[in-house]
Image (cartoon, rainbow, N blue to C red; front, side):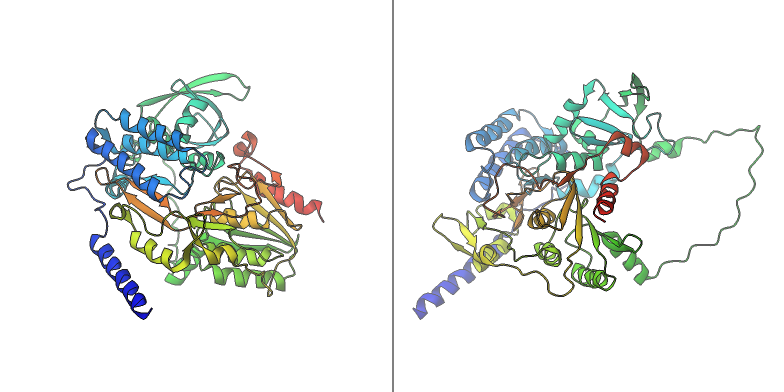
Length: 511
């Protein structure tokens, strides 16, 4: 028995040594040129290898899309590569396949070389910011310092002859999300429409825009790309008839912030709490569950809410795409009124990553998997503690007042775990749109990175599947709001935060 344990330990040490030696395929291409082309045979090899790696390791490859369909998508991509492709073209082809998995934590990233040079090659871009939902596209701003004839709130109906649905479907096709909800995709595109347009459709020198004017009549306008360099080269128009303006008054130089002040400013951008004593309401914004010293922030915030006897709390998670489950759990403890656990099932299909040479962090996964998981009758490796451990609500500074959670398509992963845990609780109202993260389950734990050997594209690959509550329906939907509110043309035109306004309206209603 003793000999057996010693032998096992030696085998484990030897395996670790081999993993460290083999490490991982290089993530760089020698003498790389931005967005350079790669020969077709090499790209086909990359897709074939990617399929093998995902089949051997991905826990939810066929959760929403059956195997025969995924085989078709992969084979179609492989067979369609008949010529060399640029990195952007190949990235789109791979992303269109990956999106069919319907797993938001499986996503495609450009190579490190591409990302490093991106800032120098960012411009020119499509000149307008556009907010989208369903098939609606509305101007949210202009990148040109001179503005645009298409003002904020203008409804777009087509760009260069392509109607909205055609434009958005092409962008949706290269974005991964959980299940069948498109709210996350719409939110991502709204956050940077020029980049997604450029990625999906490339650049044109000009854009023929059709739009609805203030009377609802269809109009047309032509606009050009925006580039800061182009703007700088333009000479300002002078008017010699007008008198020269008076010299500007001397303004005192702004005091340089200290390191402590810069740190506080950065933290306040990541999370903040403000209390309005006039209506006994606090507003808490949490940008993510990764940064911001959240343990200390939550402790001080809920202590303050208790001291001020605040009755209403608005928690804004509209920009929160997730982060550490421990931080999400901590916030949940301050709000939830009963014990809770993260998952009914948290399991992987393998104890050690196959084709590890092409997977970054394969060693880390091997170590963690052997540390926390055990094989069960279903043949999968389960994180037993996560499946059995219940977290208790906080005793100190637990908030029992009315809670209004603002969510959007960006509310994802660990943020969705928070909203799904407290959904249905008597003192909780969720306001906004369907969350981007899945309500039934996700693959939010133990993420690794595949590096394809020829193109050096990086593919985020999850290794564990999480079913948060097996009693829920696996319908591919996100957390549904109790009070649905989505963007409107009028709110964009006037710059009104209609979700926050709705929360305030609900607070007045329950007074």
